[in-house]
Image 1 (cartoon, one colour):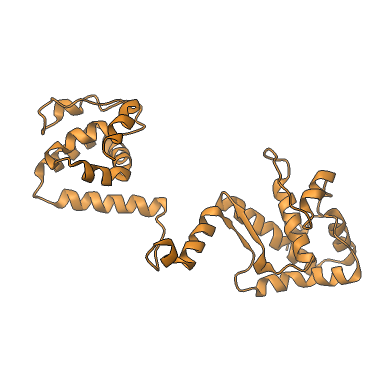
Image 2: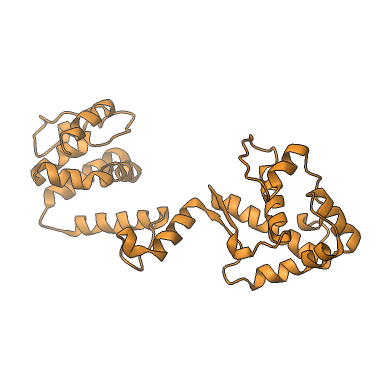
Length: 263
């Protein structure tokens, strides 16, 4: 590690309330605003758990974002790596900063923790809530009613899937009217507008099938089935081929009353 690496800098001493939150012997609920040292406290708590003899695979840390998980993982591993090679004075100072004992046995254990965590098959479980839930479901797919070997659909994969579905639909020459309607939307608002409409309608596909809309009404459905739009599509009913201009755009606040009748 270089001297500029945060893992080599001495740990800042915890404040009184931070020491209480980092104590692995107590259950703590910490509420604090951004930049007040929550990650520092959580890192200290993980370090103290390891120093107290907890196995790496028995520690679970959940965060909301991948960035936060990566930052916390990096802090813990960088500190353990530093402890493995620093001098006794620096190690004693770090242990004192997190209110951990600094006896000979603890010093020896602190120097072994980096190798011990690396040898743990799953390592430290510092991950997002979504990753934890995905792993839990993957371990019990039958009980969760999910097909074994499932894969999650992230934003990038979802966008690619929508594009493949739209390409397949436009390639179907049996529905020329649908292709023409999609072309009108694309010309009127561009590809971005077309994707917004697909995003809005996609989650409500089962409702369309249950309510019995016919393909000839598809353009009217697109006109008002966009919850959350800032405004309806003003020129869509005029271009509507199915209702010949008789369709009407429905404002977002009336979406709930429409969909309620489809359930």
